[in-house]
Amino acid sequence: MHGGLIEQGGWFTCSFLIMITIALPKGALLQDSIDLFLQIGLDFRAFLDSSNRQLQITEPTQRATAMLVRAQDVPVYVEYGQAQLGIVGYDVLEEKSPQVAQLADLKFGGCRLSVAVPQESPYRRSVELPPHGRVASKFVQCARNYFRQLDLPVEIIPLYGSVELGPITGMSEAIVDLVSTGRTLKENGLVEIDVLFESTAYLIAHPLSYRLNPEGLGEWVQKLRENALCN
Amino acid sequence: MHGGLIEQGGWFTCSFLIMITIALPKGALLQDSIDLFLQIGLDFRAFLDSSNRQLQITEPTQRATAMLVRAQDVPVYVEYGQAQLGIVGYDVLEEKSPQVAQLADLKFGGCRLSVAVPQESPYRRSVELPPHGRVASKFVQCARNYFRQLDLPVEIIPLYGSVELGPITGMSEAIVDLVSTGRTLKENGLVEIDVLFESTAYLIAHPLSYRLNPEGLGEWVQKLRENALCN
Image 1 (tube, chains in turn brown, cyan):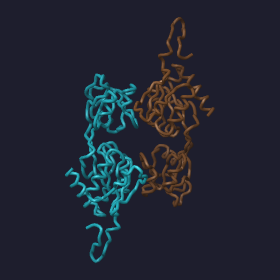
Image 2 (tube, one colour):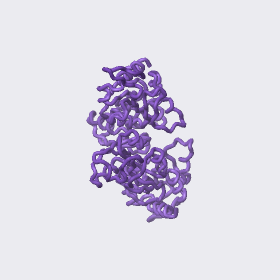
Image 3 (tube, helix red, strand yellow):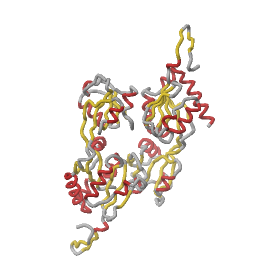
Image 4 (cartoon, chains in turn purple, green):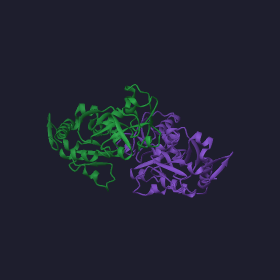
């Protein structure tokens, strides 16, 4: 049904002109995201070219445009309807609570949001952390909700990077951070003591676009779901 | 008075053992920050070595330790007293309003926080932007305060990177972003229409540490001020 002339009640509409727009995340999820779209016939490999400076590309068959943005910005572009589809880590969805439709767990990019403390620390579970202690994190909302549920009052110190420096410099007793291989924790003498949640890449959509199904969005989503399950 | 035995009321104190800790920002301000400290005899050039993975180093004369952190995290480490001194852009201080002492304008790293719109846009001053229009920015607080002062209600869309995509994708009428050479704006067909403020690198200190002047902090600050003025 794509890429041709379709008769609708006497009108011919050219579906060549209708393109979907997809927001792809820079960083760890990009390669797998591009591989997934390639499996359903949409080629955004130009983003992987290290000489590429473009932030928006239309794939060769002219059926879709993708924009390359920071992982945290993917839900923003989808929420405002600038992209109909997006791929983003579940961790970002949990932290930002954007108004987007979560369509499918794509099963790649697995990691977990964990509590970690220095190896020499006496704490081996989150609930053992001292009341009114300090926890450094990039995931301020997730960390706050987690310790609230534990009924443990802690001070969350918001950091943008190198969260492991929190305990190393003595600024915080613990951190809440994403862990995939665990290498960074190990290199910095930290151990994981609890897991807030597991995270993988999610397919998200602009809720209204998806409900009204323009541009055959539902069809693309179905294909992405099928391919994600096969991986 | 540094690095020797000092008699104080019959006690000998060894000032060798007392080190100051400095938070240095990754990115655009790092080279000039390291040059400035080098001028007053503290060598943190190891951070410039591309093979370096350490986030904390003690300089060769053992008088100071520096930690290398994200620019936005510098005031956090200084506020919590993990670093007594820090160097950070005035833009970060304006956005985050941290509880730190602003000791000196170091005069380097000059840039400005500006409002920009697409070249073809009809708006040539911030006040001409449509009420309830959208402005994308990484500087959410600064942008909000600015438009509030103009008495112009706008929606601030918080982004983490590539803010110029806001107007390009049609998500926002304008952006508020840092401009140094103006190259990124030009490449993306945007023009600056107003300046919120000029920004340069600032020397900041933990207020209490600075007031109590332990570790001869005041002396280091004086040297840094003198050298910053000479540049």
